[in-house]
Length: 635
View 1: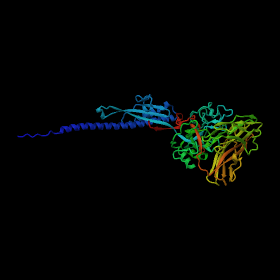
View 2: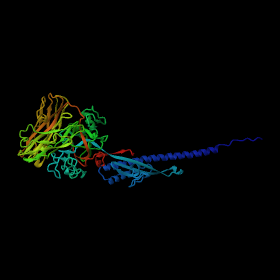
View 3: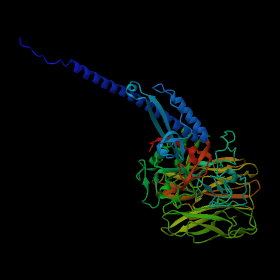
View 4: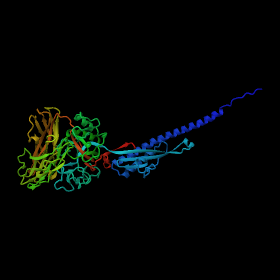
């Protein structure tokens, strides 16, 4: 019988291949399962690291010490660690930071710990997660690392606060603790008790403010040895020293005023925007915070990109309204700081004390100084002169008050100009107005006028106005506009205790003669009773008549006799503005940045005091109380 051969069956081979494939499939499945767990743990750890870094940054912003902030960060991490999706609880980061091998001390290579460096907070956390099925093929645990980096960034409002009033100083007879006197020199970003000492260029006797005691609603001025004097930050009362209409509201998005064509625009701002559009844009940054770009650190001479456009005082209401929606007294805010003098391209400006004192017979030659500054494009010289109030026949200037001469004259800014002659011989007691005029014929004819009240014989019962530089605008010729002026007197033995009369005259450039063609003018009320301390207001209403479009400098005369029978006369300059458009030629030089605590807020002004010195960089750690915390990439 023939034998038949059969081929070997493949069943055994298939089983082997199937078994091997199954092992590989299970291996990959177990690895995929574990990798999914690791990604889940990684997301969990990243959320915890972010929360911990933000908690520490916000604690530092609130004013906690670094050790207190570190404890809060660790508390947040510990609470977040309880929610691990894998059931494991990560270990708190070590007190001594750990770095990758070979990179000790390099923040970029932090792998476990909490690190604070300047304005940066870094948090790195670890978690050891065990493998599940992959243990069968030799895998035990995997170390998962998550890292978070937070920066404290200047949360600046569109506000520039005056650094000095009545610069350059020194204040006559100044000594600590300083009484707050708006007619004397003060550094508004020094402690209140030392604010009157020294000059604008010599602050060696002054002390930088600190947060000090917490805000006290019933007594905001409760720590004058630590915080700055209470001042108007923006709005009524925040007038600059050169009587411009600016009241603190700046255009963060228009910078660089080195020349008339050098403006830089940001965040949609442009040269064709009208006044309403630009003020709406700038006020809109109060709630979300200014998006940047940041200002470069301040340098000397100024970086043109640290020059910002300004808005007139009538525009301040919109930014005050936005601040009222977000902040309350006791809150702390970051603001730019400027000298207290506004600039125009190309231009010069004097910083002149609004009141100077002298006895009835005294020689104060060279005792009064004025700061003469300029912008980058001004290349001329300034001639300076003085003249008396044109409408006060009792003014002793030129007789018992010798004519004031200035030195050097002419002067090249930036410099100091002194009253070379300033003397009296039997002059009558009272307060009288003398005008200082600065004149330059290059690069074009420019005149600036500054009223100075001369207090002869130590008059104490006085009054003042914070409305110098007010602008009354009308959109078209022939229209009527109005503005409010406020007058105040101090308390106690300094109360005026008398009535003052108010009237409108032409500007100093015309010796008080009103411009031909101006329409009806009224002041209501035309008298104010200042028998008790506080502030009172009057409304100035003007019709443009047949005046052409333009700016018309005018003056309010305020005069009265106090309780002691002494005559006090002050002149307050303002501008009647007919049909002019928004311009970008006015600006302030930012000198630095400081943190202020709000003490009161209403529809007219936001008041507060400094709780830090002035720092060149808005992101400086010393300004943390005015900063916000933001997560940024690790590298």
